[in-house]
Image 1: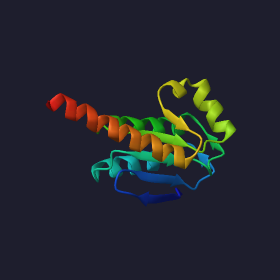
Image 2: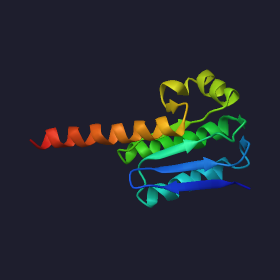
Image 3: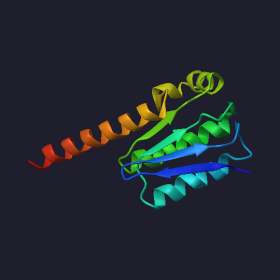
Length: 128
């Protein structure tokens, strides 16, 4: 069974996975959760993986779904607090070149807010 914590803020949502294993047993539930957040209008997701000690390819697939949904909504998806094992898997899969990865939740928040400002400035300059 999947264990998810959610902290909703105005500009972003922090999703905390409580499971130690992000594998085929919960990956479809996580994908569905990301889809439901997207349907609610959430476009910036910070995925805190502090509790996750193990992931497999199905877990990475769920992460990529979250990333794609945020990109399609012109938002940002950020992974943070990765354990060494999970980070190595991400790096071996070369997803570190595709995903936003930072060490802490605080840095993830900064990244989301900075990107929101950049997007707003870009939108403003296109209007003028």
